[in-house]
Image 1 (tube, rainbow, N blue to C red):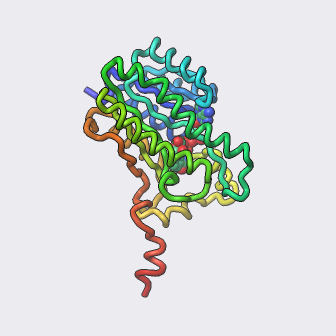
Image 2: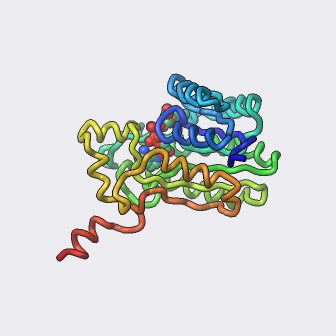
Length: 264
Ligand SMILES: NC(=O)c1ccc[n+]([C@@H]2O[C@H](COP(=O)([O-])OP(=O)(O)OC[C@H]3O[C@@H](n4cnc5c(N)ncnc54)[C@H](O)[C@@H]3O)[C@@H](O)[C@H]2O)c1
């Protein structure tokens, strides 16, 4: 018996990076997986990977900023696979940057994808979860939601998602719905913001490693393993938390300590 036998999981942004890894992990743990992405080619690739490993998976295309597309994708998932037991709000978009140089339309776009998008998905799934007696929602936020590491609009949206997580956990706990957030630190993917930094410095992840007490940046699978646990019945008494999956980054300023506090 696996954690997710007879369960249906919908993962947004599962065509790429961390989302693909989450889809693989949940499928390995027994879930039927709905891969939602704006990028049809990449989303279909994830589905083919899962199916070729013998897992049950479908692709649903939607732009999470458009509520009608989200509703249609969730309805197709329910018709094809059954009621959604686990929603993973993973899709996101960010350009590397700071506030001074941020174009107005970039601010609006990042808030739209990173805050309104997850809200649309939560809104689309809640009533069916209530009707079926419960479910789990995991919002992939970021360490940027609790400390500033650049990318202002993205960070503001991630902070808001932590608040939305608490809101859903509080309002829907009595309906059997748990809602938690995961806060990854730097995770080695070729997401747009990382690709910009990799183009500037191909060794960016090696250089970042020194900021992480465990001595390395994260891998997509580090996040996927946390999702698998938090979304499962093993975490039945955990709701409303913001769990860092960050190799200890938020625990302290180890570089400052090494350089200034423990010197000599
Ligand atoms: N990579 C990191 O270092 C890191 C760190 C902290 C948090 N995170 C979070 O982890 C999650 C995944 O990040 P990633 O690095 O794998 O990103 P990624 O860019 O590699 O993948 C994001 C996926 O979301 C999809 N997507 C983007 N906009 C969409 C939209 N409007 N509608 C539907 N799908 C859309 C993309 O097509 C892509 O498949 C995000 O929530 C991100 O904020 C990542």
